[in-house]
Length: 460
Ligand code: UDP
Image 1: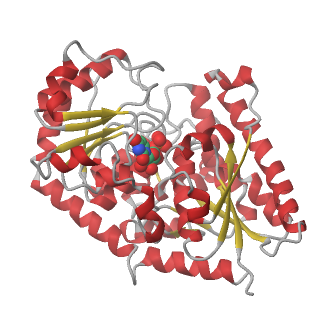
Image 2: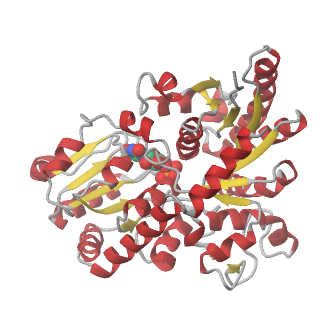
């Protein structure tokens, strides 16, 4: 019997990393390759809730997780974010080494021959390489950010940034004049945050790319060559295979992952075509009580039906409180839920626009479904993704803050109405959708790259 190839996929434990790496794993497994997916327990547990019960049997992906090794006094202290990340980065490669040894010495037919590791845990690539396995990196964020990451040593050496990531010259960083997406100012640099410790931790996610470069020859990215072709000259090791979705290249699984009785699908079916505002602000955005109030009232004033994802810890870490009477007033034309299958929502014909924090996964999903964006970035690369959407691709508008740092109900409602009545933005979004879809269809560059990657795995 022919030996089944076996890859180990290693994810950094955060939803925005696990999500694209799981999608990649599903697609790899759908091509006859055995996959063991590894991350830490708590984050995998959260993600499991969105997977069907018998996911492992259906997908032929084995899920493995361990405690993240973060001390309790560090876990809940934002000032110790750097320490927490370091603890995770220590624990994962050690465990990966043991896991590979255990599987490959067990006499099983399906020995691991390749490790695909999130570059955020680059130590796993070093382990794989030193054990004589194929080591492939994956970058789950945008390709312009990967280009920025690859250039961090040069930016430091030329004193364009300092070791805290602060831009030292009074001009934007411009990696290439041919690539508008590769320009950053201090207001949209990828490690932007309101706290220096967090900025330093975020900078670490960029500097790790060159730090481990000797251990990988290939870095997969969730991007589309045709959207950014000149940019890929800046990152020769990058292989764009985007969009990574639940619903492409793995059709047999996709049907099962979207329950027909999803709480939102029946409601979406009842709404007029092109009417629903979809609001989802990612897994980490936190809003103040005042901001939640303004968003609620902005949605109300817009007069449109809306589907709003409100995580239990969305409002300053506690349950969101809505303005008095709000829920009753909008009950006929809204759904407020803790989670919804986003790809399904965005692909529904009733959806007119996406109020998004511009996380990269959400960005790719919205682009693939041709939905115009109302951009509301919160931290880190979300600001450069916003710029990419609004200024480079021109498929969205930005929400602005007032002098108190609040985005008012009037800003929200008027931008919603401007966006949904703009034929130009809708057509541009449909054009981008066409490019993205062609790329992952037969003959398209992303599908070709993905297939040749699978062939390489099978030939190991
Ligand atoms: N997501 C989802 N349902 C929700 C909220 C989020 O399926 O109700 C998914 C979304 O489709 C995306 C991921 O969670 O794939 C969020 O990743 P992103 O990079 O956009 O944001 P992050 O959470 O990392 O800030």
